[in-house]
Length: 252
Image 1 (cartoon, rainbow, N blue to C red):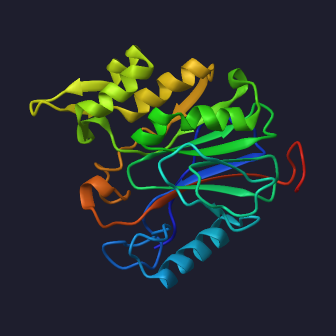
Image 2: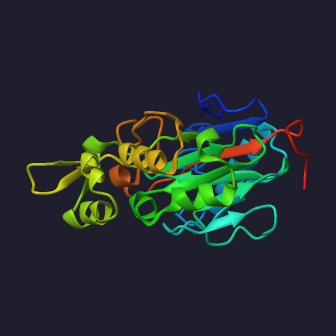
Image 3: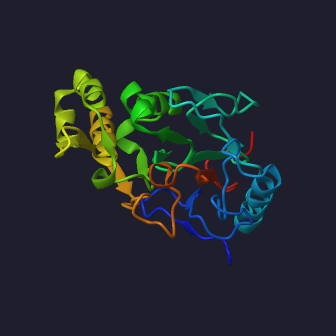
């Protein structure tokens, strides 16, 4: 089976390429079957390496993606100047030879492109990073006018399947009481959390107006998506973004 991916329909400049992988087309065995792109989740290292090789070949990527050591924080890798993709939950670049990557299995990958396509970014937005300000940190690192930035919200766990405690809700409301709209009480005295709505709210506060979304729930899509909440031991999808060499600036 060939590799499958989603392509954002988001109006970004033609020089910007972006995709989010689904779970088919790789060599990993269950429970990571089959295109697991995440290291450190228990899968065989050789299988992960082969999956990454297949992805790079299928997309004709200009370089190996920058696989971050994601930590549910707000660190942003300035890929034009930092050569080691160490602990970080976001990355930005103006170079056409850099491929930014975010790995997910319920958390939301958020991709960014400036209006002219000169700078791009990617962020790992689970609830912790979202509440801590990873989207704000990424926009700041891009240095682009927010009103001209395109944002795409990738596949993530949907509100019907994302139950959280009151402490999570309180953390968001402490920053903005309007975040209450992102939480619905359930019969167990807990809350169903709408990550996409919370992300849209925070982007709107920044002045980012051009927001599109995959509108795909990782938990509900058993065949197409990995989900940590659903399966526990599982693989990781990857959202990638890069700039073609013919864009506003060349390779760095």
